[in-house]
Length: 421
Image (cartoon, rainbow, N blue to C red; front, side, top):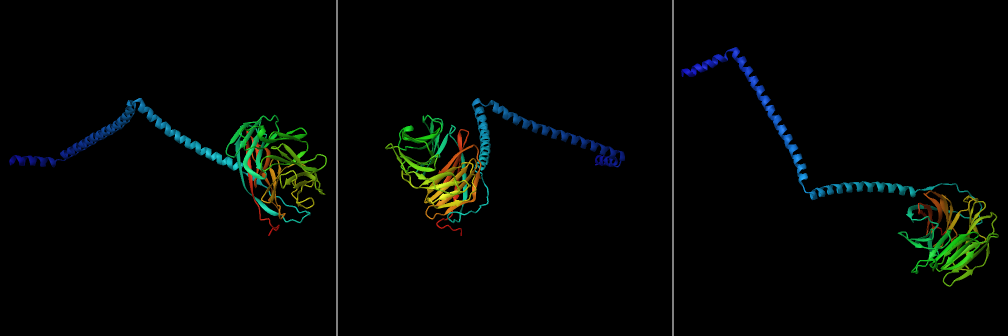
């Protein structure tokens, strides 16, 4: 008991000594700092071990790949390359689609210009009904050659949904899906293929209907049977049975018209009666005809561009409608006509960018013109020609061994009565 008391007493005595208390505090602070230092060493060691562990795992992955067989490495790289290829292909496809949309927007661009319609006295009093251009389409078709001509395949006034091209002794049949080429040694450069025999097993000039222009005349072949035509051809058509070529000619000296039917099956030519052009006090700058039937004695109506720039649409030799279009009577336009469901359609094309379109009801006689009188258009390439494809109109431009082909659709009013109300 005494020993314990002595020890406690000593301790108590020491605790009551200020120097001892200070010394104890210093020792405690030193031990605390040593503990914190030791603890920080442990943290640094743990972080270093963790970093070494991550680095070791990374190295282990690389080492593991390196230890793979060449077959596994090749498969891995193939998957990566294939994935990158699909991404690149998707980007390229998106760019091409955007470019195509921009090109389509350009080729489908048709500019219309409003003009003021003047009034004049017509032989027949006529209120003009109004039609509209409602839709245009365009496409570039590569033919692999520079075309001399591109014709619409019609039988009578029926459109067969084919285009017939000619270039450098080649016949190109375009059925609006694909182009078929045939060697065709015609021997002339300025030629136009108009039709062919659908029953032919071998495509050659003996199964074709075509015309070639030479100095001073035009020569036409109908399934091997030929005829020279010295006068100007102002209307040319194929019969509905595709056996005959029908033309209307105009004499160069006097304005005398005559129709000719050339049959290639029985090798015969039927020549109709000569008819004088109708008389008009406005003069005749250019004339075309629209035949009601395709035969040797067919009657036809007259379409005249007068010297004063008016379009005169004749119902017979005396009655006509005077459309004051203010046409350019110094430049000869392309005149294309057709008959669809008792209506005569007339297109006047002034190359390279303007077109007038008119429709006449052959029963009531009513005439409809476009709301703006004419349409201005612009497409790439050199303008070549145009023609009716049913109720729509087609024009084409030569470009890059192919053709830019544009079509125009129209909406016409009810014309059983010539009333604007």
